[in-house]
Length: 235
Image 1 (tube, one colour):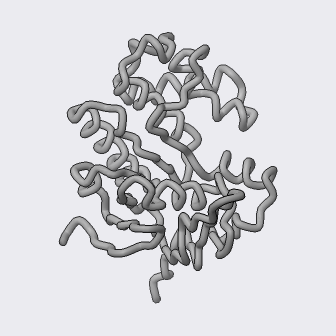
Image 2 (image 1 turned 135 degrees about the vertical axis):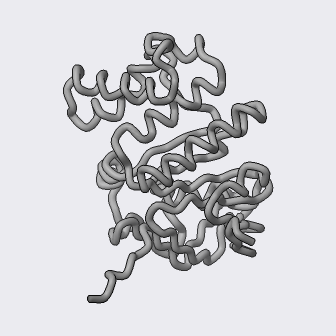
Image 3 (image 1 turned 30 degrees about the horizontal axis):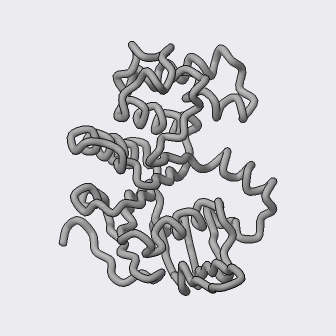
């Protein structure tokens, strides 16, 4: 009996993004083709202005492409309405940002539980699941602390816990170690790698830091809006 072929979880073809103002026309991304496999930990690397964050935003459905198509789990997200995109992201994706993007008025536990509220899960269940996840991340002593009472590393762990509490297929991480010291940054990369290996979650991480990127399964290099090279961590 033949093994069933594993299909990419993300497929992008001829992906192009042009930003226009009255004076300029900037091609931020130019005819990018890309396949991401389920469970892959992929680092997208490039200098500032290279197009790496634009690529992540398009793949995550946060921005619409000027041309080309994007399919996630076989569904063309480039054709979805904003309402459909919001629902799709809620069910299938999680997000981790450089600036953490936590709600300052909520506790760590409430921040982590928030996506479950959006899914209609009752308070008792979502708070318990958030407590379990924060305990797993060694933050059980900080359940009731607000972001301003946490260190940068603690806030980023809360952010990652929030991103994965719904068991998403994909986590998009935009410079997740950018505001952290070297030791804490290494810890965050280990958490992301562990999520990929043990939960089978696909991780797409944008970074300019090669020291962290080398821990990914594959590195994609972006330059002037184009993929210029690819290599994996075995090279």
